[in-house]
Length: 215
Image (cartoon, rainbow, N blue to C red):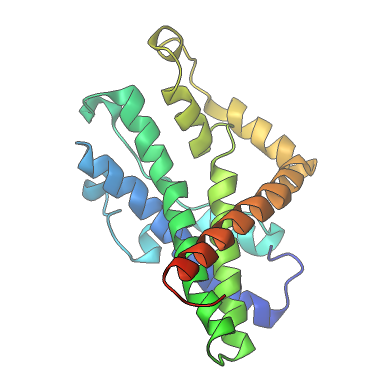
């Protein structure tokens, strides 16, 4: 996303990425805390301060290669009443927060374009923020360790399989890197991001219609 961006675009993209990452990781921590694990609170991750969530190496990778990551929220499954289901719910909280942010962004963007005159710089920034959140949510739902999607899928497995799963370790990360550098991930993201974006926009337009606003 940043690789071919102009300086002006980077000025918009970086704060949007930081905020999207921050909310994503914060919601992981809040979900874990609500389900009985205070590890994230102990680590200072229940915070809106981006510095608490930004991984330095991940940030450098964003700037250099256009792809990076935030600092993962640590969760102790032994503190959860139902580790299998609760770990899946904690994992789902991150992508869900990004889709909510994207939806709220579109709720602002539609009237800004349809009903008011808002400078294109601002509407472009809102649209960019929405797209970033959709892309981040979709990417994290891919069922490849260590992404959230793998934990969600694991939570749906029968106990007889779940408790025999080997730790993913570096193997999952290697698979993810191969998918990324071969362009498979990009093709999936482009397709799914468009589909999810269209669905969210349709939901926003439907909501405005039932509220009596012409769209």
